Amino acid sequence: MTTPQLACPLCQSTGFQQEEGRLDSKWGLTSHKMTLLICTNCRYILHFYDRNSIFDFD
Image 1 (tube, rainbow, N blue to C red):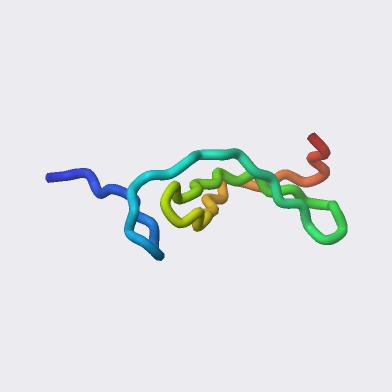
Image 2: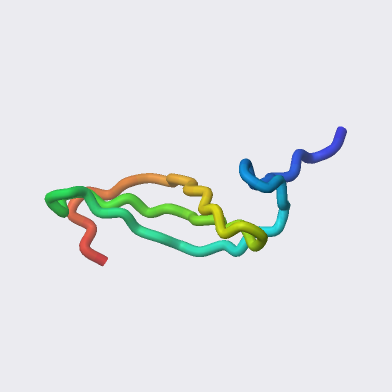
């Protein structure tokens, strides 16, 4: 059995740059930490959501 490899949904490239990101709610009450994978070919961004924290101002 082979392990599936992540591919870009636009260009099918398998090369990605990994970054960490944070998205705050409109009123700033919640904050969502995300892992961003950026396609090295077309720069399409895949968002992976881990968990949220309330009143997290870091």
